[in-house]
Structure formats: C-alpha cells, structure tokens
Length: 272
Ligand SMILES: Nc1ncnc2c1ncn2[C@@H]1O[C@H](COP(=O)(O)OP(=O)(O)OP(=O)(O)O)[C@@H](O)[C@H]1O
Ligand SMILES: [Mg+2]
Image: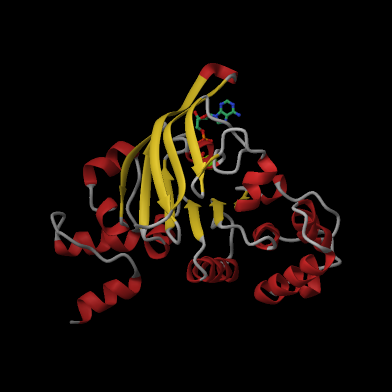
C-alpha cells in the first residue's frame, strides 16, 4: 500500500468574512511520490484546500493528516517544515532585502545549523543557477526570477511535500523549463508534489493525477487522460481540456476513448 502524504477527512472551511463556505466536506488522499494537480474555476477552493496542508488555514470542521500524523494542535512551523508552500504571487512571499537572506531564512527558522544552511544554499544555487543573484535585492528582479527565488527558498529545506500554487502564471519559457526540472527532480527523489494550476496544457503533461474542484467540492479525481475526457464534469467545473487534446478530439471524434496529452503523444499517434 502506498504511504499517504496528505489526507483530509470531511474538511470544511468557512471564512468568517462574508460567511463563505469555501470547502464543503473534502475527502482526499495524496500518496507519497505523487505529482498531483488541482484544477478548477476561480473561487472553487483550491488555495483554501492546500493552505490546510501547512497550517496557514485551520479546518472549521474535519481533519487534516500530514505524513500520517493528525495536524490538530501542530504549529504552522511544524507543518510547513514538512509541507513547503510556494505562494501564487511571489510578491506576497518575498520579504528579505537580499536573495541570500531570502533563501536562508526558512532553514534558520527550522533549526538548521549554519553548516547545513550553507550546504543547502550551495545545492539550491547550483540547481537553479542563482549564485550571481545572491547579493541582489529580490524585489528588483523580473517576475520569473522572483518566482524562481520563492521556489528555491522552499527547496532550501527539502520539504516532504511541495505545494506550488499557480506556478506557471507569469513564467517565461526558461522559467517553465526550470519548474519542470524541479518537479521531476522532487518526484525522482520520492517527494510529493501538489500543483494548483489553470494551465491545462501544463497539468496534462506534468501530473499523473488530476483533482478537479468546483464550489468547494471534488468533482473528479483521476489520471489526466480520464479527467480531461469527461465532457460532462469538465462542463460542470467550467474547465477547458488541454489544447492538444481538443485538437485530437476534433480529428478523431468526440467519443474517442483516448486522446493525446502532449504534442509528443499527438505526433506519435498520427505519424503511424
Ligand atoms: N480571506 C478570505 N475571506 C473570505 N472569503 C475568502 C477568502 N479567501 C477566499 N475566499 C473565498 O473562498 C472561496 C474559495 O477561494 P479560493 O481562493 O480557495 O479559490 P481558488 O480556487 O484558489 O481560486 P483562484 O483560482 O482564483 O485562485 C471563494 O469564494 C473566495 O471568494
Ligand atoms: Mg487560488
């Protein structure tokens, strides 16, 4: 049996402001080593859900388990050490005046020694090409670089679970390739990755499982080739399938039992 990284049981979250019930009893299991994407319209509850994984939000009712442990009573520091969360907007995450400080702040807070912090810094800088930026002010950088820095600051403490909230938004092509490299590396090293995204092309190519949300509930939870073929559920969630899949379905017919998830799949299928 695969080990469970995240489990929610009947998770309800109501924001006091406006009395909005953003999660309406979500039952979910994410397994260790999974690369899972959460998709759904604006306001469907994606961010609210993942903020329970590291304690930024607490259940109104229901339970959240992280790496097999009930998180009731655990501090944000305890939870976010095991589950690193990269914010949707890097401007909401960056608060230090140099990239070096930004990268070192979390490991120091989590009790790393100076030597361990330094080792992490070297590892992350060489992985993400950041050495030349270490003494610069992160807020002076372009959006992609800021986003890469926020991902790097979480990789500094190698969380067991990495949550990326809209990681491709505003990223240029170099940034996208870097992101894909990081996700694959985390997966290869046995970490769990949760991606929230509106970018269905990216989701189809980079996740093994898609959780589709609408109005605070999970509508569908399956591999991308299944989720993106379910026209009825897609309509309910107001989610458009990846472009390459739409093209394939336009050619092969809407009732096809499979469709290409990537350009490579498509070329392979039609070259035959
Ligand atoms: N701090 C808050 N106070 C009150 N209501 C909130 C708050 N944050 C979110 N909401 C509401 O909760 C619901 C779910 O919001 P959430 O941000 O989780 O959605 P989302 O799926 O992440 O959307 P997006 O794709 O736009 O990021 C929405 O109705 C939203 O307006
Ligand atoms: Mg969101």
